[in-house]
Image (tube, rainbow, N blue to C red; front, side, top):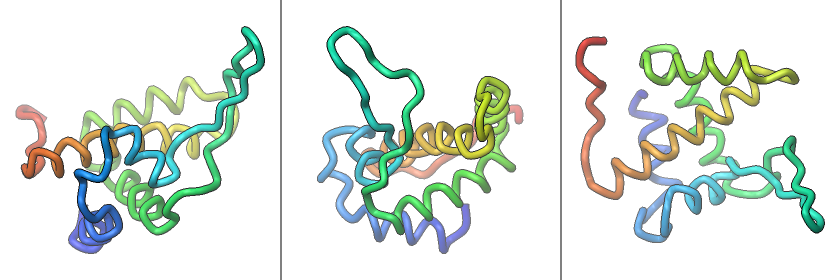
Length: 121
């Protein structure tokens, strides 16, 4: 990703140690799904939450869109989710790929490392 998206993501996250895990960071960014359940029923198809840091969500979604074009692992994951999704496949596949990207961002910031793509690609 470029310097603008990287700076925006780091600026909006702030201190990574505020979040106990990558799921908390994803929820803060608004890249999480609502839960609908009653008794033993749990809905399978839910929507993205409408709250969270909209600027961080924007930076993550745009960065994910760029990463999926240049990183083979993210492209394969996006293509898999795109083929599995019946309704609005691009948006859902991009949101699922963004969750994968959030896990990567959390791990890199938490361990204070730079991303190096896998060899052979």
